[in-house]
Structures are given as C-alpha cells and as structure tokens.
Length: 88
View 1 (cartoon, helix red, strand yellow):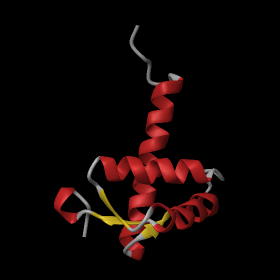
View 2 (view 1 turned 180 degrees about the vertical axis):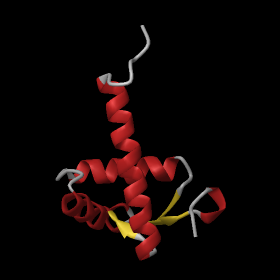
View 3 (view 1 turned 60 degrees about the vertical axis):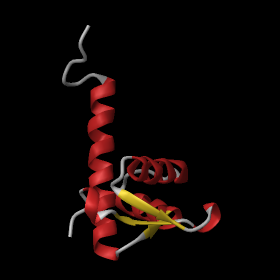
C-alpha cells in the first residue's frame, strides 16, 4: 500500500527536508557550523530541542556530499561542499 500525501512517513520526510534546507541556508549565511550551533539554531527556529537531531542531520548531509566535515569528533565543524551542490 502506497503512502498517502498525509501519511506519517511522508509528513516526516517533508519536515526533514524543510529542516535540512533551513540548516543549509544558515550554513550559507555563516560559512560553517558545529553541532552545538546547529542545535541552537534548531531551538531558536522551532525545529526542536534535540542535539541528536542536529548531529544526525549534519552527518547525513555530509554523507550525501552536501557538507564537508572538518576536525576531530569532539570539535567537528561543517561547511558547504560547493562542488556537490552547496550553493554560493
């Protein structure tokens, strides 16, 4: 059975995509971002208070090649990968 336009899975996918686009716009504005900064951005913009969500979003966008990771695990920052679709 196909997921309808308001199925929980489809609604979640749209929310994830919207959240990712807002995060990418913030990275475009600032030049780079850390997990802590992404977490504060999400809290300030109403996308949720969970630091884990910020971390997973950044990791997923890096895995997809949209972001580039820099630094060790406990000091990692991310910036747009302009060669793979990051804007600018």
